[in-house]
Length: 221
Image (cartoon, rainbow, N blue to C red; front, side, top):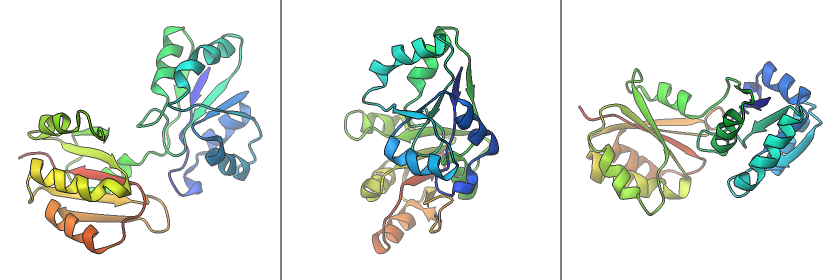
């Protein structure tokens, strides 16, 4: 059995009872970064073997993990924050586990884009999740493909690129396109800023830029 276990994106109280119980019951925990996961596991009294599973080693590690599960080991995968495989490692392991006839269960739990979308005030009956845009190669091609997208679009962005991304969005979507930027979701300094892309640019030119961002952009009318 492979369990995909979401972890809090900020507030530790967002950890579910089921997630804690699963992590206490499995034989092995795979963590995106063992240093990041250690305080979380210690907080909830979880003492298990923990191994790193990230984008740099997941291709090499999958066959060994599959072998362990076939021998009867129960394994849980966690990421640094949120739901594994959503802009984080996990897809490859899930796909290969299914191919090998192994059971996979993904627990419901924390993920950043859902509260950001709901908080945005933008239409959420239909939306598209784009995650992180390519940093260089393919970035402009992806943006041009989204120029006429009618659904609300959701992106992840880092603090050191946020102003550049807003400027790119103004060129592609227009300066009056409505948007919302959420950061530090569920943490002490959680903030959501809403307005046109030009207004968001002005806000973050004048205020500190900290934390990871979820960028929601209205679709074309």
